[in-house]
Image (cartoon, rainbow, N blue to C red):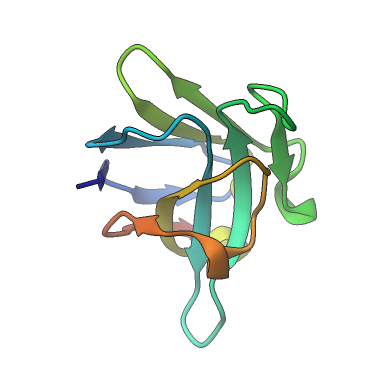
Length: 129
């Protein structure tokens, strides 16, 4: 059984930084897309960043980012101690949301939350102006 456990989020002022982590266990798939998503009150869940473990069709470490976070957020993973990270810099009030990590077994990199299979419990990130 795949389990994803996220670290505590936090509250920061605009311009600050936070690092989220997501410990993955019970994962036995050869290749997968691993991503961070967020959902603000009254809004749909959206993809923030994704990284692929590698497959015949996708280079290991391939990444994708939402336009709104490019240049500010960085997704990475630790293969030896299966953990997914999201480094968030230059945070803005509009980044305030519940953040989720997720895993989708498969050969393609994607940020579409509708196709992800396994989800963490979510962690709150609040950015004040």
